[in-house]
Amino acid sequence: MKNVILFIAALAASSAFGQDQQAAENPQATIHTNRGDIRLELFASEAPVTVENFLSYVDEGHYNGTIFHRVIQNFMIQGGGMTPDMVEKPTGEPIVNESRNRLHNIRGTIAMARTSDPDSATAQFFINQRSNLRLDWKPGEPGYTVFGEVIDGMTVVDFIASSPT
Image 1 (cartoon, helix red, strand yellow):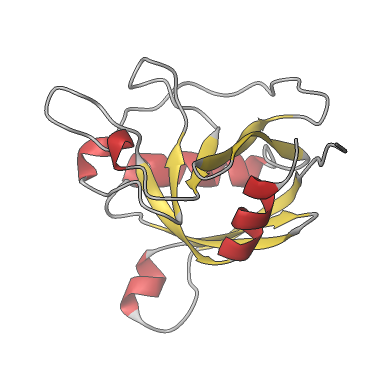
Image 2: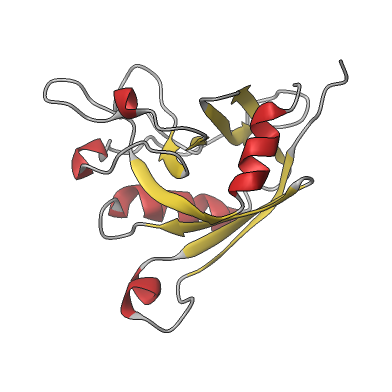
């Protein structure tokens, strides 16, 4: 099988799309890949630290040239931290876990990747290809912080998830 490498060529964000109040409060970002674009709406009021962190990596150009390095069909696609030769890019300090915001890891949401330490997320993120409620916060069990959702491009996510890697 031929491997498919998927690049995040650029991640552009804007804080004022559309004319309604919600769109003005929720920034949008577009992930440009060599398989199509994935447009996101970010939930700034529900996950302010996470959205600010994500947008700071966007502004720094951190995501340019990274790949979706962890792809599990019928689960999620993860990116934002590795170059095509699987070298991890340096990141800033980890952020606090905001998974208590009660947003759910359902199909099409974007969440922060982390280690077993709940407060270890830096730049890597994943897009849920299916609902993964087991990744949600529960009393005594920290979850994975959902901070936005795909508003256009789930067919691209599904294509990436089904591609051999």
